[in-house]
Length: 119
Image (cartoon, rainbow, N blue to C red; front, side, top):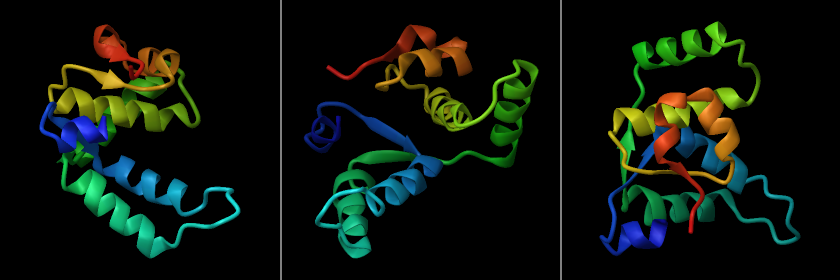
């Protein structure tokens, strides 16, 4: 997806919370040759910030998502999936690509028809 977005073939978007998650994951990967935090930041700048629309969630967005999760008794880490899905909703995305369709469809059924696995 990043390459297609970088080439201008698609318009990609990413939520602000996802940027923080991406940094956290890439700086703590359990690999033998650790990637420095500076290298991770450069990668994010070059591959994400330059190619994706950044979708900011407001206090109202967080309240909406958390209230919906609480009403549906959804707990734990899928909270972050719901925030990602809400960012896609807010950006009026045509597709939400994920390797975990089941969780995303469960936490944000309004987008079920656009949630897909990457090709």
